[in-house]
Amino acid sequence: MTAPAATAGPDRKAAAPPASASATFGVYVHWPFCSSKCPYCDFNSHVAEAVDQARWARALVADLAHYAEDTSERIVTTVFFGGGTPSLMRPETVATVIDGIKGLWSCAPGMEISMEANPSSAEIAAFPDLKAAGVTRLSVGVQSFNDAALTALGRRHDAAAARRALAGARDHFQEFSFDLIYARPGQSEAAWRQELREALEFAGPHLSFYQLTIEPGTPFHKDGVQAADGETGAALFDATQDILGGAGLPAYEISNHARPGHECRHNLNIWRGWDYVGVGPGAHGRLALGSPDSRDDRGTHQIHNPDRWLEKIETQGHGTAKRRKLSARDRARERIIMGLRLSEGMDRARFRAQTGAEVLDFIDDRALNASLDVGYVTLDDARFAATAEGRLRLNGLLAALLKDDGED
Ligand SMILES: C[S@@+](CC[C@H](N)C(=O)[O-])C[C@H]1O[C@@H](n2cnc3c(N)ncnc32)[C@H](O)[C@@H]1O
Ligand code: SF4
Image (cartoon, rainbow, N blue to C red; front, side, top):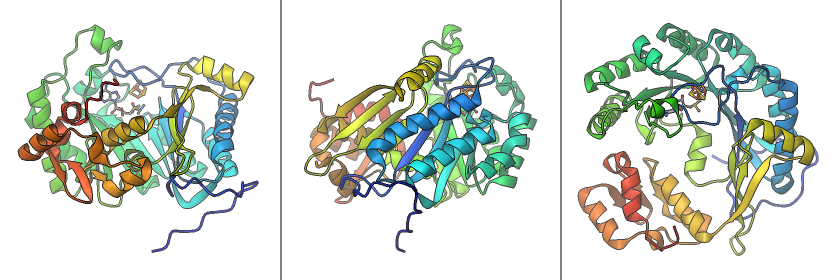
């Protein structure tokens, strides 16, 4: 099938995209507000008394316009509204941002526009308007189907609200997903298997399962809350692979499962190492601006604090804190770290096109052979991949595999 033609947009630059860039180009928009702060969460999310949404919409579009100056020849294929809780954006705010994107870049037909949502009644009521604003894919933060677990996680909603949100998501969005957190304190494998079976009753084409992490600085950390131990965490991960694989929703990434063809295209492109713009407080982006002969990859970081981000946009026209050049080594190591998260692993030819280097140049021979022997990785001419056993212990595996070049 040939690639679909892009829609025309106003005032396009005639220049061709850099040859090291992909046919995919993502836009990430961070909305940093929530109705309450969950005690386990260290995302850039804040509870604000009042948010001037029209002002925020203008600022987000200004931040987008700043990045469009360098990338206006690219064709946007995916947009992701993350947070925080972006489903608290008013539909007109969402529409303004989407219209801003469409005015700044050409957009591919069938562009995926994902949004994270919390299961509150106000947000559920807004699903039709969010869809009318342009959202095509919803990801609902269910976290658990067990009321006691939701209370322990400090969530404002109960399991009944989560079920209502999933019914609403199913009614309005062909593509929808939900998140569950596992390896919670005291959670047994039997209880998780039961929760997974319940999840399957409500499942659409995509599900995410995040192992609880206790992040420094969070109330959970201060209170000494302990996630399930490593052995239990591993058993729960294995149970997830087993039950979801059997139900036709295999893992395509460590924490993400989908029916084939229903993966989140935005995240998949990032894990495959393609580039994207990131706007909003604390967002980061990756831009491939050079050519294969003269590579110029940039990592961009927006100001973290929402008030300071807003102030910088309004005084200087952008919210960027740092825009750093990525070395060949940075590019390669980052792509390996991302690529081994995926069940498909790394496409070695794509890695060559993206970095100009060979993936094995960055891999320690002895660790590779040992990992092949125990079945943590697979390697052939086309692909280098971590197996499910390898993905379960990916941090340790990467620490062993990545050559120690003394630069960290
Ligand atoms: C950035 S949150 C946004 C979603 C939405 N605000 C919500 O809470 O439903 C995305 C997901 O990250 C997961 N998450 C956040 N903190 C976590 C932690 N410490 N451990 C495991 N998962 C976590 C939750 O499953 C959450 O749904
Ligand atoms: S988990 Fe979601 S709702 Fe809770 S504080 Fe984090 S971003 Fe906000």
